[in-house]
Length: 66
Image (cartoon, rainbow, N blue to C red; front, side, top):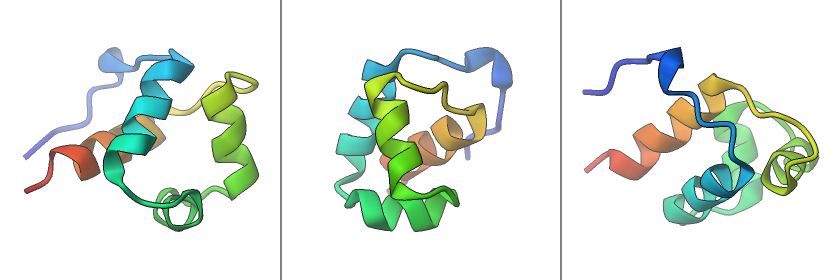
């Protein structure tokens, strides 16, 4: 089980985009899981806004879960 560690926060929008794509979920579904709207997630992916570590951790957990 992963444990949150904000020191591992990677602010690279490309990394975030890779995580999003690796989940296999739509932006709409991810928005519900992460608790932010679709527009915000798209802004994070484009690098227009910085994404919080909590969003990164949720995506990493989804990608790494069996």
